[in-house]
Amino acid sequence: MLIDLIKKNRSYRRFAENTKIELNQLLSLVDAARFSPCAANLQKLKFYLSYESVDNDKIFDNLNWAGYLRYWHGPETGERPCAYILIIAPEVSTKHHHVDAGIAAQSILLCATEMGLGGCILASMNKEIIQNTLLLPEDYEIVVAIALGKPSETVVLEEVIDPDDIEYWRDTEGVHHVPKRSLKDILIHPTL
Image 1 (cartoon, one colour):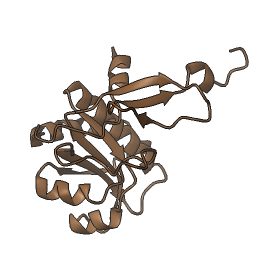
Image 2: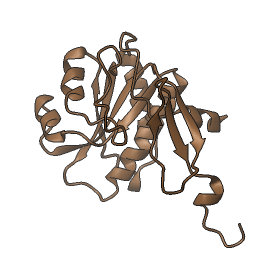
Image 3: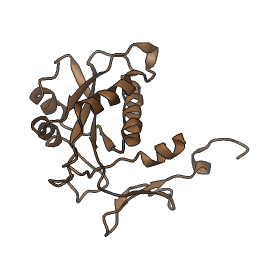
């Protein structure tokens, strides 16, 4: 069922770096994004594919990985993503390009999950350095980066206990815990 795929699609931040992702797999993921809905069907998004270590390193060095894990500065060597998809949009674009990028990213990650891969959408990065280093078109901006690979960590979903504490965390075994609010807590409906 689709709900099982959605639950399995987590923000993975540690990967089996030696498991390569081939160009044809990345093309398949972008093809899924191509079929995704977008505002006014404008289809303004572009996609930069990185699967070689030289470009991967240029991207990795400029990403911020996990805001709530203040002590952790990202995957160690051997745990890094083996591919990235950068979603870029024209600098002068519609007010909806961030929504379009979110829809495209979710389509990419659901298909990646179905392939046995995992990923993480990252918006916190040094966009200017990545843009210049990879020689991306000057009239485009990076909206998000999607890190991809074979996950090498366990991520578990839990119910939120304290409504003011939704921070994800790692236990002493390295298991990544992600609190999720209950359905009742996110609905606004007078009879529920």
